[in-house]
Image (cartoon, rainbow, N blue to C red; front, side, top):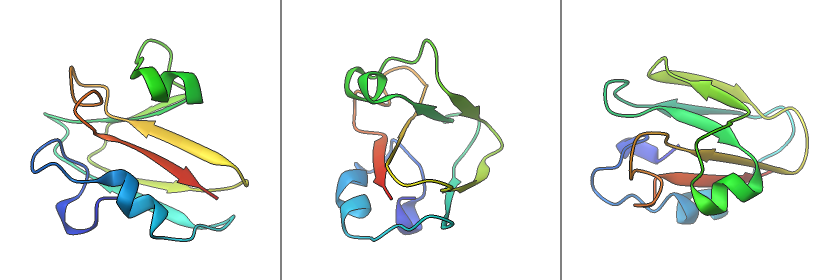
Length: 96
């Protein structure tokens, strides 16, 4: 996610633009690569995505290289849980 920039709050990557330019299918795998000292990945519900609410994520990923299989159709919402990262645009909505 994020192409060569990876999952980062630096450089103002437009994750929305990246996500809508790709077609995702059930069974596809996405990768989040990041520095785990400065980022993480949280899978959240739609409301949490819109408000950047990090209090009760569905799943938290912290390995710095997370591989996630998209095993159903619909939306997958991901945000960074570090302070202000999501508010600054480090979030992505993957539609399968």
